[in-house]
Image (cartoon, rainbow, N blue to C red; front, side):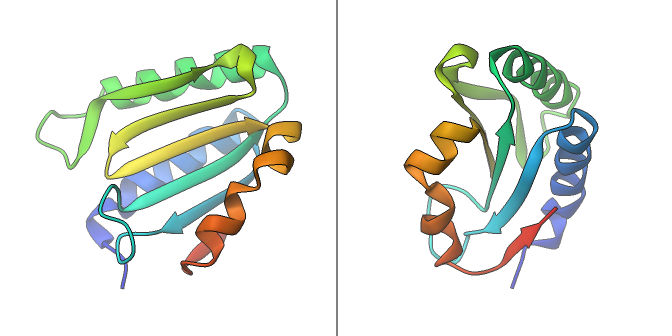
Length: 121
């Protein structure tokens, strides 16, 4: 069973990623098997310039949120756009943006797909 209160945030994040031409966007509902977060979004970025642009847009999106929301308005960012993998941890939602090589090498989708409730965009 998914948490419907988070669905508008998930939809908005996926729309933002789609508008920025991020590819192979997948959302995973992991609340039933993870104590750290409710949703994980994994997507593919093209290069470091694309990563920087996506990171700026995601940070602006989160900063516009109410502090009372279940999703942090100031997510923790891990990684560097030049590294091929950036992570935004906004409490109930964690967004991973990886370049093609990193996504294939680390294959984090396999970890989350075992938990079920995957949606492809």
